Image (cartoon, rainbow, N blue to C red; front, side, top):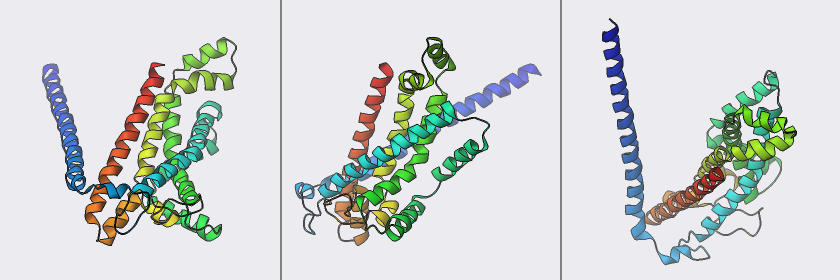
Length: 279
């Protein structure tokens, strides 16, 4: 009887291993197919004129959109990262785990993480544009995206802090360090790779977002004069070109640039995370 159960368990393990490997191979094939499809359709249509400083209907320049993408990402992270990390530190290190308000905050955070981006866009439009009275602008888009990525940063930072062994904290307290010093000198530096992982995911969501920005930042194809001026990001630029139906080839070329930008940002963030981990 025991041998029979053992054989069945071994067969089940082998089957699961095969399924896991097949899933990995299928995922890899799908990713390679998508990247290859974008490159094949986009690279032949890349032109030097598409990187002109000013957008016109002749050159369909994506350079203003690149500048707007970098600006939008930087402002959004400057707003969301400190708030998200600070909230996670409070929830893990200071808050009473049995407090109902803390439990409500966690449930709310998880709920907000699953809301479609177009809902955030509608909220941003109704609050920042209709209620406050702003025009379509970079700052309205950045604030909307900050609210959108805040749950992601909070949850990933929270998990990174929880993963730090309690012995790190006890050792620091034993040497006479206070709680605040322990958090910022011992716990948080050890959790940097996990925190950066959440920021990397947030950057990917910011760069690829369209729905929330169409309702808040607008689709003006130029480098804005100020944070209160409208401007489109690369993702919105690609959507606008394809939606018009006149610049389909240029939209594929924009997709290539967008993909390269995302890969470069992820590679840079991963490199920084590894350096922190070694340090």
